Every structure is written in C-alpha cells, then in structure tokens.
Image (cartoon, rainbow, N blue to C red; front, top):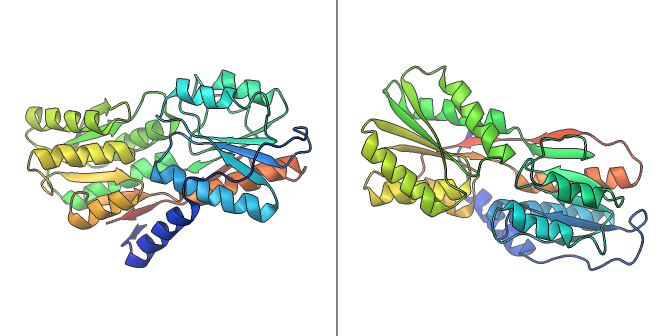
Length: 309
C-alpha cells in the first residue's frame, strides 16, 4: 500500500513524541511479581524516534489499564549494554517485561533469568531465536516489509537496469535480517535489478556513509540502496550527499522518523517503509496484561506497514 504522508500526520507524530518525551511512568513496586502492577520496557536503544514512539504507545496503554511502566534503554544498540539493563531488574523484577532483544541469541540468557523469577516476557519489535520464552511477540512483518521495499524500488526505477546495495545493521538483529531477506527474495522478480549484496554497518550512520561511498566507487551502475533502519538510512543519505548523487541513486529507507520524512520531502529519500511503533507498544502492554490477568494471549501479532513516496 503506497501513501503520501500528509502534513497533519507529521504534526501528529511530533505532538506524540513531545507529549511522551523520554520520561518514565511509575516507580519501584514493593509487591511480589505475581501481584504487582509494574511493567518494564527495555527498547533497543535510547533516543531513537521509533522506540520513543513505541514507549509512548506502551505508556498510554499502561495508564489506561491501571498499570505503571518504567522504561530503561541502553545508550547503543548493543547486547552487552542491554544485558546490563535486564540484569538491573533482578532486585525488583517487574510483573512483565516488554523487550526488544538486540541480539537474537545473546539476549536469551539474561531474559531467561528475569523470566525465572516469574516475570512475563513480551517481545516488541525484535525477537529471540528461541520463541518459547515469550508469552507474546509483536512486530511488523519485516519480511513483507523488505519485499515491499523491493517492489517500491522497482516501481521507482521503472525498466532501468542497475545494481542495488542493501545496508543492514548488526548481524543477529532479527528484524533487519528479515527485511534484508525479504528484499532479496522479491528482487529476484525484477531481473533488471542486480543485488551487490548486504553490507553491515554496526548501526552506525558513519559506517553506512562509508559503505555507500565505497559502493559508488566500485559500482558505477548503482541505481538503488535499501537501508534497513533509521541509522543506516541517515548514513546512506550522507554518503550520497557527499558524493553529489542525491536523487541519482534511489534510496529506500525503513521507518518514518521526523528526520526521514524531512529527507523524503527534500529528495534525499525516494521512499520510506513506515511502521507503526506506537501500536506495537500498545499491543505489547495489552498482551502482557492479558497474561498477568489470566486472559487469552496471542502468541504472535503483526503491525501494519506502508510504502510512503
């Protein structure tokens, strides 16, 4: 589904971010895990618009349902830093933990430690390879999002032939890996477009910019770039800007942060695959509360995606 983002939508998103901010709701609870109404959210990284929007959705839903929510995010998208946040829950485990695992394998052990104390686990955005530990997992259909990105790129280039670069974040990140895989799968249906493979950026915009600079030098027919998240997209735009190739190489990003939307309007991006992080946060709280109150829980939920040009 392709949409043009209205100015009102951007304004509403800005209001949401401002209203939610980076604050934390609730404090330490003194009750047992079985009976308290304390929820914890540990997103992938702090100060990223996607996770701030997710926090806003979760925060509002928790208040609506009579629960408190505390958010603690690592400074970088890093398993070791996120493990510190998870381990810090040990002295006062929440009734439920909403978490976006930064590594689909390395985060298993620390999350298991929290679960062993009776905390219900809900995965939001990303997930572990071990699907048994969480009572529910809520995410966009990232494979379909990657396919949608490839279809959108094919529409943008028409019948022109050329090479395509995929910028991923960190190996072991479930969501971006699924996006890259979906993109590669759909690209097979467009023989005029040839993939030159996936480059990992460690979720650093500077590395993404450097990868784009190298690709432009080695691949004269580079016609498109798919950036699997916010940081890779911003880095890719910087690389194209530095090379004077803005608008000449089609950049398709993932997410629709205010900065990305500004980039879309200015021509740095040609398309964005937009998620609904606030809905993911809201549904995460709904499933956590359902599990705590003995109500039916849905194991897997998906949030909608849109191609915005």
